[in-house]
Length: 544
Image (spheres, one colour):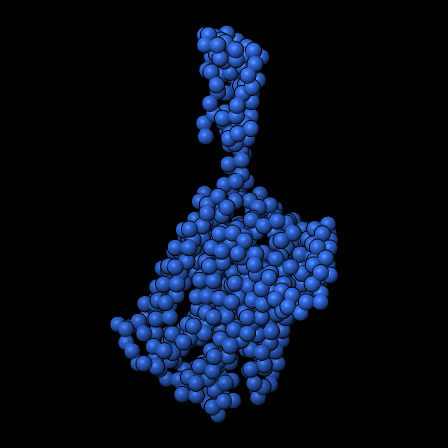
């Protein structure tokens, strides 16, 4: 068989009249049968179901065993982490001011930016340095460990990795409780435990667990629902800081995190098929037997695992887009609260309101719009759209000079957030079922490397401008955001280069649908022709 629509029809008595140059068969019954064949084929194509209804997808994602538990775990972790977003920044600033610079006055959070004592300013700088270093350590550990951890989860199961991963993730919340009850305890302990969370990154394991169960057509929107659950926690949880003091909110944060860990141990089922896990495990055993005496194989294992990123052009482009976007998004997210408190006098209430507004919009976008956008324009254009939103978002942050401008422009963060679940879904759709953990681990390693570089790079730009006392028409404070906007512009260019046939989950299905229909139509017509002894149309063409 050759190309679809041009398959050669065997020579037979049914075609002899045309081959001999005689007149074609004009049998009326033959013509009628051919017309009926076309009508049946057209009606079948028209009746082919389109994209599944939105609520069917939501119901599947939220009620199926595995994804439903994962959604609750993510929601609980988001509440645990979101409780202390604004509290950690103010607490660490004040603690560093007292321990490192002998400050004895009232809390640094009581002062506006123009009235803060020098000790508080220096404490803020120390806290931001500690955040940047802890993120550097955490993300470098993730960069090295994620591919290997992902591969282990492919062979041993997801839950075995997720349980210690969540335990590490909530460890800083426990240390934060202790810091609040021991006024002389150095905040460095909090940032040390924060750095250790990179040993086992829980998010790529959860994404892999979802991919074990979800069909490819629903991965992007269901991943979006997962991120929406996290956005809900981060949006609502900071409001608790307005009702409780720092000690109370620290205890609530640790308690919710502990609840998420217990729920994972008790209620989360294993999502990876035992047959797939056994097959991967046997293959890894054979590899280890061959290379167990080679020290170099142990040292280079993380690099070997990352080679999946270089498998094809699609994966390379996804890796570049991930690195560029996460470098600036992660850097801005890590430093934004400190920046707003230092430059624009944001307090706990302002931070809570900003996160609530942007979080609720993110939930709306990730739940109500994501699937419709995915069905309408495909994953590739969603990534392009999210990257363009990043260009606009961070440029507006760069020129913002008031709280009101920050509140308005932060709304675009919801659209920027479409990028991560979509990229994860595209990566998942283009690997085999026994590579999900490996692929997601490698992708999140690139993300971790970017988020390790991002905070340090943006801080160096911010303080580089300040140290030179330059004034760029009022943009000196926001230069790091202008830089972030420029980096997102590069991400747009790489997103445009993504191959549509591999990036969009519906392309292959639509293509195969039409190819199958063309093939069925051609065979039906040719069968009728052979039975009737001729064809008034000659060789039947099938439109490509």
